[in-house]
Every structure is written in structure tokens, then in C-alpha cells.
Image (tube, rainbow, N blue to C red; front, side):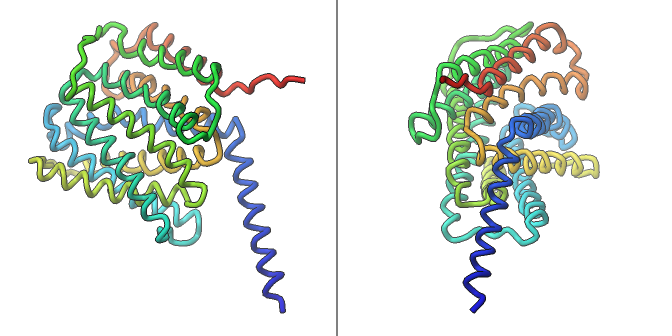
Length: 328
């Protein structure tokens, strides 16, 4: 007799909880701090990966070992994401039969294709060019979300904000370094494909998270993608050595970066327009430069150009996220 009312109460409580979560995660202040946490974690990955390579004796030209190392990192990140997500949900996160194709697609785009193309391309192009091409992912994500999947409206204001933020990325990478404008297919072309894969993964994450838990999606796609990358790196001739406690601690930290940042990013994408979140990606290389100056003693990277780049990126983020004026 009481079963139907109890089910209605449970449904009501579930909808109320989802509504509260949506209100919280779509709050501009929460989006700002949440996205900045993600960017700070990703930005710290740039110098920490270099330190990790040094600890495990991986040369900058050893692409196979870099892919193997990344595979171990992402597999660990997936396990951590599922573990932390299960703790917060108070139940073990398991994929449903319907979510398996989503996990496969995300794993292919967000981990396997993005990072395989990235490491292959990085071995054949300059780091400066790679960073700038990677920043194009924000534009691609907004265009795909707006024109292909009609998830949001692409406006002149959003494009202006992206251009300003992109200018900041170009400035922080080019200043004092110079850049060869020659385009190479196996270098720049591979980085561009990596960028496109990441942009599509952001759009798909938002699309799939309507019915699936984004933390669950992030965790299992990392596990699958990490295993595939580790196998690819191994059969390409990659190897790891120098398994000391500090080296493992650095690998563990890199796993935490991916687990926390991608899970939080997925939650922000679920409850906000792609453009509102993706534009914060312009902060990654800027934070990376600033942290490299501190952690790797690359003092030459600090200067007026870094401050100007930071201001440009912040201005671009403000323009994209500024609410349009309401017409009477």
C-alpha cells in the first residue's frame, strides 16, 4: 500500500538533489574556482611530467617510453577517479550496459587518440607550436557544440573572448622564443588531430553526462585508455626504470591530477555551456609557464610577457562568461 508513495518521495528527493547540485555547479563563482582548480592542476602537470621523466630516465626524444609512462599515469588516474567517486557517492561506481559505448568513445577521443597524437606530434615539432595548436581546442569545442550538436549558441561575444584568450596563449609561448611557421604533417598535423580529439571529447562528455555520472565516465575511460596506451608504448619499445619512492610519488601525483581535474571538469561541463567552461583552458599554458619558473628554475620564462598573457587570458574568460545584457 505504501510502495507507490515511497517511490514518489524517493523520486522527488532525487530530483531535488539534482536541482540543488545544478544550481551549485552552475553558480559563476563555483565555475570560476572549480575551473581554476582544474587549470592549476593541469598547469602543474607540465613541470611535474618533466621531473617524472628525469626520475625514470626517460629522454625527451623517447616517445615510446613517454607513451608507456602516460599509460601508467592514466590507468592509475582511472582507478583513483572510480575510488574517490565511489566514496563521495557512498556506493561503488559501476558502468551500466548502456554506458559502455559512451566509455569506449570517450576513451578513444579523450585519452587514446588525444595523447597518442600529442606525443607523436611533440616528437616532430616545437613545444611552443604544440602549445599554441593545443589552445585551438577551445574554438573547436565551441564550434562543434554550437553548429554540430546545437548545445549552445555561438555568438560574436564568445568568439571575441576566445580570440583574446588565444592571444594570451600565443604571447606566453612566442615571447623571447620565436617560432617556425613551417607546418609539418607528422608534427603539427598530429598535434592538431590531438586537439580535435580533445575538443570532441569535451562535447561528448557533456552529451553523455545527461544520463551517466561524469566521474564514472572519466574513471573508466581513463582505465581503458591508459591500458591501451601502456600496451602501445610497450610494443613500440618503451621501457621504464628508476622505480624509487619519489618517482612513484610523482607518478601518483600525476594520476591524482588527472583523476581530480577531469572529474571536476566533467561535472562543470554537465551543468554549464561548453564555452563557459572550455575558455578556462587558455589558463593551462600560462600556469604551466609560471609553475615551470618555480619548480624547474626556468626564471627566463617570467617577465612582462607572462603578466600580459595572464591579463589577456583573464580578459578573454571574462568576455565569454559575462552575461549578455537583457533587452526590454
